[in-house]
Amino acid sequence: MPVARPYNPEGLKVGVAMIGDLGKIGINARIVSYDWGTYLKRQREHNQDMDLFQLGWTGDNGDPDNFLAVLYDGMESDAVRTQWHNEAFHKLMDEGRTTTDQNKRAEIYKKAQQLMFDECPVIPIAHSIVVSPASKKVQNFKLHPTNSVRMKSVWLQ
Image (tube, rainbow, N blue to C red; front, side, top):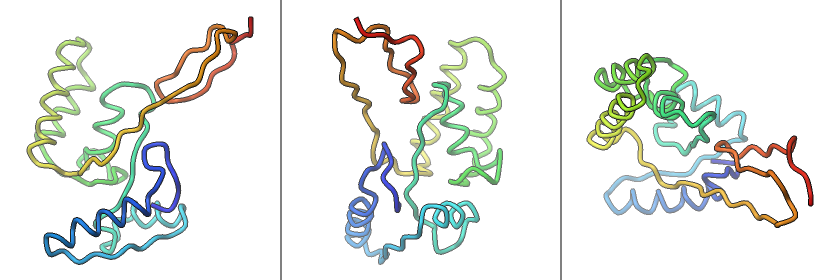
């Protein structure tokens, strides 16, 4: 991955580690990097020479569908980069989107995560932790789930 991202600040180092681990099990791989726009375009087009790639996501709204469906439900859209085709997972994503009972939704998404665990369509390698320095002088500042900084209602005391 040619650019630093909050969830992967060192794409080249991660790539080198991945190649090392793959080599240990007899898979020869090489790092190929492109500028960010080309990288995303080639990966989106599912080029055969990009069958292993680094990519991540920062959820937009905190809803599980905005993470699980957007990243993993290849039956929903060609735009889903992983292109994992699993009928049971797809049905769970549809069910989760149309269920309003939050307890039922939680169970649906737990089942979906179990399917992902069982089939391993991706290999998660990192999860970023958001840290925000603070001062007692700053009033009404709240961390946002997407790491957006919103200052409209913030003041200094």
